[in-house]
Image 1: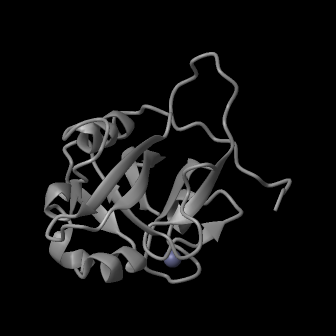
Image 2 (image 1 turned 180 degrees about the horizontal axis):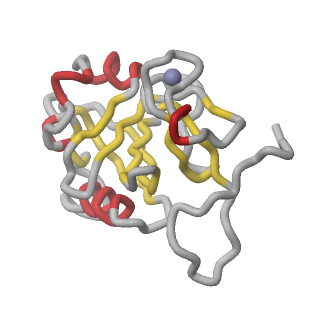
Length: 163
Ligand SMILES: [Zn+2]
């Protein structure tokens, strides 16, 4: 998969660390883009619906993974088609709603009840390091999903990938 066109753009100002490898993906279908999109071309070429977003290699959704884009105020900004099916909601019904209406921290989460929200908050504010959390659908008990949470953009937001 290595490519000479692999983007290495930074999402956050330089901190003295080596730039991390990142990838662009569609916020609707999750398709990966090998080229860095120019601003007018940020709409996904695969589905024609989602905007292309950039995230670190170790965070970016893999084929078939469900994911959400959440802002620093913990409001849902976008939801992948796979996440719509997984959580049995439609994107247009949940955009702008609190993510807590869709996902709750799983009881056994080591970080306590605020761990999931804290990870979203940190990454949406520009923390470049991915976090892990255990969550469940807000209205379903007994189901646990592992999630990775980290920075994506632009605009800067938190990417929550359900595994
Ligand atoms: Zn797409």
